[in-house]
Amino acid sequence: MKRGRRAKAGLISFFILIFLISPITTGGSAFNMALAETEQTVEPEGAPSGQKINDPYEHSNRKVFAFNDRLYFDVLKPVTKVYSAFLPLDVRESINQWFHNAVFPARFINFVLQGKADKASNEAARFVINSTLGAAGLFDFAQARFGLENHEADFGQTLALWGVGAGDFLMIPLLGPSDSRDLLGYAVDTAMDPIVWLPAAWWVIFSVHTEKFTNYTSLHGGEYEELIKASLDPYIATRDGYIQYREHMISK
Image (cartoon, rainbow, N blue to C red; front, side, top):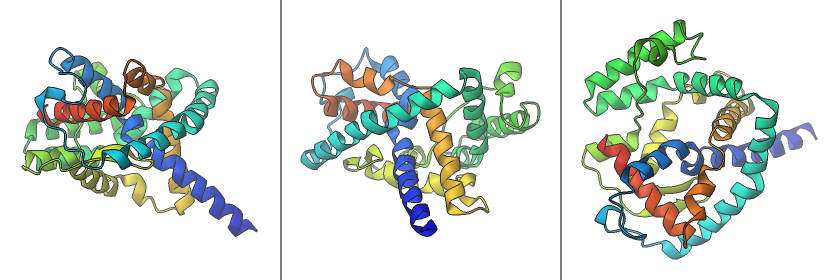
């Protein structure tokens, strides 16, 4: 009986975790920032930045999008609402900062692979300062006191800078919008996440990840709704928004 209960709990945690780490939820803030910065040059839906959209699986992608959309509104949104009601904003911001500091290795390695020595050294300095003066990473002391700004890097960006094409646009169950290149990048970045390698039982690691992304999502509530509410076609809005977001991140 106990094994059966643990298996069910693990399965539920797995589905919640995977959806919580989707680009819809984890990329929300930067996603909207990219759109805001490029809105003056964006062409009508279906052709962002004049680039041809490679979406050969649109029919099946739309079905997956509908599934993810319902999962967001029926599961993720209610969960984060309850979570936000229990924890004050400043506490959630500190938790988010701690997790961000903990995944420093992936950002540092990607900056090195991208040949951006200045950003790699900046990231290393931020990690040392925030891990000490920033109370083990709970506060962004590096930016507040030393002006060392945060920069993001992932392996999808690294592949793009190496000349690897984006490939087909993909809408993945639970994961959300992606493309062939970013899906591979996501797998590599996940392997560089120290939390994955914690010497603990799988359910402990799942619990830590679930806390991480539930907390992050609680800080960006409503951004997905903002993205799709003014669109005649939410799928196209999400697809084009994701492509613009990735173009923005790669060009930085």
